Length: 102
Image 1: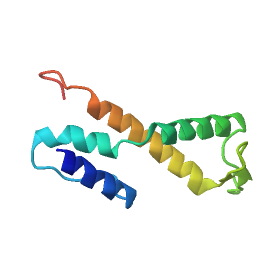
Image 2: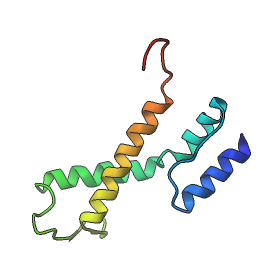
Image 3: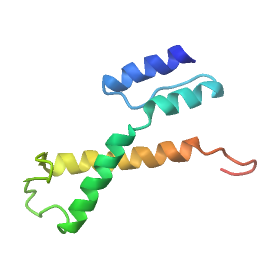
Image 4: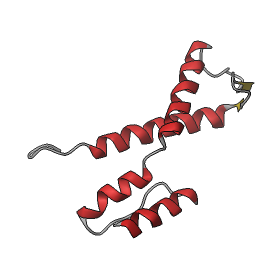
């Protein structure tokens, strides 16, 4: 499973965000490798919080510079939202399913 984890991490660095497996025992390694990095999730939460504080994205799609000096536009906001969704999905996948539960 170490090789599977390493290969999946390499795929993630190349831009992939998942992979197929053939055995349930492979799932934890793939879930771990595909889960967003905690620093990425913290960045996304901070960005979305700041975005909410400023009233959301401007209707004209304007960009701004955040408090850390980073450029933020609609694509950056969409990436942050995707990261938060991926983190929630990874967290859900990590919880064991109880018998009879879907």
